[in-house]
Length: 512
Image 1 (cartoon, one colour):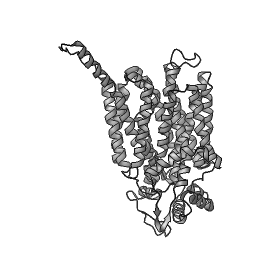
Image 2 (cartoon, rainbow, N blue to C red):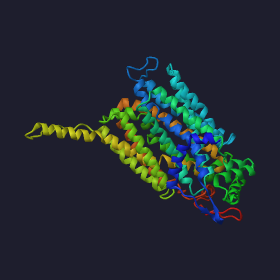
Image 3 (tube, rainbow, N blue to C red):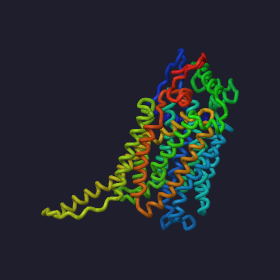
Image 4 (cartoon, rainbow, N blue to C red):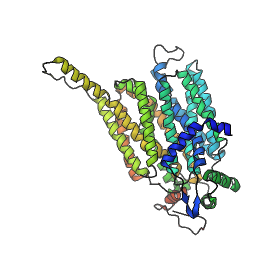
């Protein structure tokens, strides 16, 4: 075990340093002290799957220019329609993975579902790395999508169930942070590494994730639901530390489980079930409709069409770095500013940037102005400098869009999905949310290239601008503030209608 853990010591140290900046260990009720170090290790082990998800999602960005060029291998050369499928089929695989997670989350548990995702991930990368025809390319891309859908449905739920409410907000943003880091890693490696070796490199985090998760505990909530009280107590003590009094938290979880019943179709019509499910589905649908997936997948081709003065591959790396920074900022503010405040900020930034991109992509050239300067070279220099400055506007606007998304609608939708879904149906409902999300992403990503070819970037950017307005309204009307609320209190909010406070005559349950 020591030799296995030592291989990831550098990454773990960096992960713990980051978390130490935004989290702190503390004393909870009754003098019971929590130690978060092992919790961080468990979260780190799980979110390696999200690193792989972010890496595989944007794999076409540096690869498509090589496979669509005249110099590409004739067996692998992609025409516009095949390129659209190569970019979008990942989302179709992710939808299938989300459907699989609906069954696996409750059948074999969250941890095992995450570990199972390594199988299609490794197989997919192997196919793409050794591809000799288009079927292998598309098949590998689909399989990595299946893995992405499985991790997207399972990891947020696992993290929410092993975390305590003091740190759940920040830890809930870790899947998005590591996905962004995986994206940035792909962009950076794409500058120097051949596309086949990019696929080989994608196998490493999946294998490491499986090895580390073998030593991590299952969710205490799931163990209690299976009647394994001793294993649940052991898992919770491992996660919280030796000085933590597990009885209060275990009793609260057990009470929540005891009051749950199997959902019938008639019960789905009650607010406690349909409201959180609709909120979660709505968030994931709007998240994808903002256009984030096609923008990330086709980032280099988009910059090539935008006539940015820098090379598209360097633009993509800049956007990836900014995205990582913005997610780190969001994680530090998640439990301070609150979920809704960050969602408002995120929606406004995305709206302003997408509106700017819409106007730029639809602007007609201004009539030439006669410059009566005595020195025509000065006039030419001024005109050249203006054109250079304007060429950076698409890059800056895209950076602002990514920054806004990564501050709110990126990480918070993952977190809120795992917080508000009914505990009794969380595994199935999270799979449903991920499936809706990726079916939307597939349709949008596939249509994006067709819209751009037919109308230019103006039409999709205009659609993304309108969606950002709906994001603002949805946040204002539908999304509750869950900051510093336990999972049981959040469920009580939907049960009672408008209150988080749990009122009951149960001595072992403590509400805040």
